[in-house]
Image (cartoon, rainbow, N blue to C red; front, side):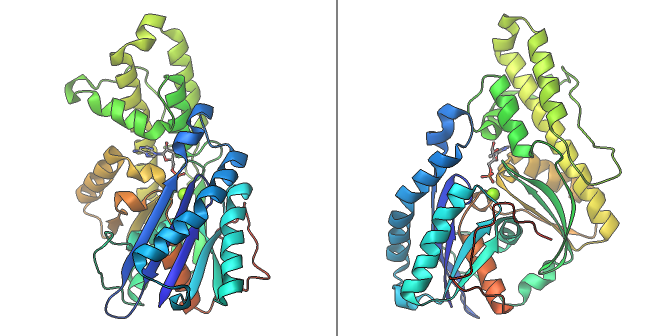
Length: 357
Ligand code: AMP
Ligand code: MG
């Protein structure tokens, strides 16, 4: 079965083609155009500009994907497209293209949930390598705890089975990625803030990592599974304002603060996820979203799970599948299709505030 995936929920235009068969499934192509540079001067994603850029890129990317895959429209068996959550002007473009293709090519279409797709990104292999994907293998990862942390979301999800989800908690204010972005801005680092803070933190030698600002790890001890990151941002702002202009610009200060911000976010994410995994006695922890590309987070998560000698397995997508991509959309579309969940282009709509449950 050949599946075309289309993703335009935020600021990445993405098209992928997957071939799924009993013995030899593979990603035939996976193209992503990131608009980061375009939104950079604004310090964040501007929805209208994002929509306009998707419109420019989506057909050229579709063309490239078909060419690289050596797939003709007639070979495609299913079109999978992101329905939400996301920015309306962005979602509109992917959805319009997918619906048009479904109509013109006379192909089935399915609209998928972007957050759920991030959970399924854990099943994606390295690009180019053939891999075996038994249709039922995904079942083995459930029950699972999913932690999705991106620029727009921070959610802890209990996945009892495919299509059986419960939102355990989410951020009450800023998302994890948003916290990286906003604190980086305070420190005068560029956008996106996550990679910038990670790079500064990595320059700090292990011996000189002492807590300077004493930043909070918000809600780390709260009884629920919600998150809050705006207090951390405010604490960074207060500390920054307290410093002399010379100190604010010093490499040492920037590096120490970056390390402390990153660590505060990592501590909360790991602690809450493990608490949830223990409470619900799950088989796996599945991570996803742009922030999961953070090397220190990946390292500390793995180390913690090893130390806990827990019964559950930790799965982290390869770096290229942490952020937004269309391979995860196509894969989830395949599972929807197999379970009989299918849409019709006439009725399919975007849903910017789509919830998992
Ligand atoms: P997404 O919304 O999934 O596209 O992810 C984008 C968000 O992830 C932005 O807020 C980035 O700052 C953040 N991000 C990307 N790479 C990293 C990283 N290495 N460390 C921390 N955050 C990151
Ligand atoms: Mg995302």
